Image (cartoon, rainbow, N blue to C red; front, side, top):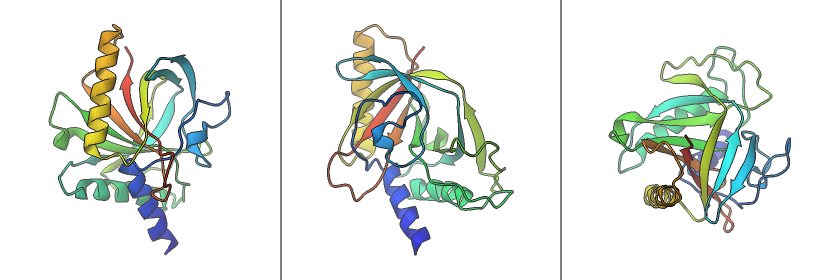
Length: 207
């Protein structure tokens, strides 16, 4: 029963159901929107009117492919693969705590149905993540990077994420800021049972 509850909570977080936004906390403290979950370390570089520039440290993720479809079955399948990995379906049988955010890479220059991925953040405490036993799951390391981030609330589904990503791209272009426009990243933080103060993000990598 507990396993099913955790799966439901995490799955709905992928759909963008989220939590309260706030400014980043001081170094070595979690941002408040991460709540009690471990999440990637970053520093706020600059706050703009409608978005911000963050500098993320190198981070580790467990990733799988995501097949987009109108029924959302691809999201469920991909999430389940990653959830099984942290539940012990790995070379060491290690159970790993759920983290935030759950991110989805969305290509803009190619069909998303063929090139999307979903990832869970690997906790800081797991120094040597175990090898996945499912060949469709793999470990990934993201180098330190500057990221433009737009935060927004509400129950965010595909359209909301797409609209927010478009708005962020337009703002970046108006300000003459250089970014990778070949893809954006959908970012969801947590529980479907939060009735207010939800938090979602879209990311573009700065150049």
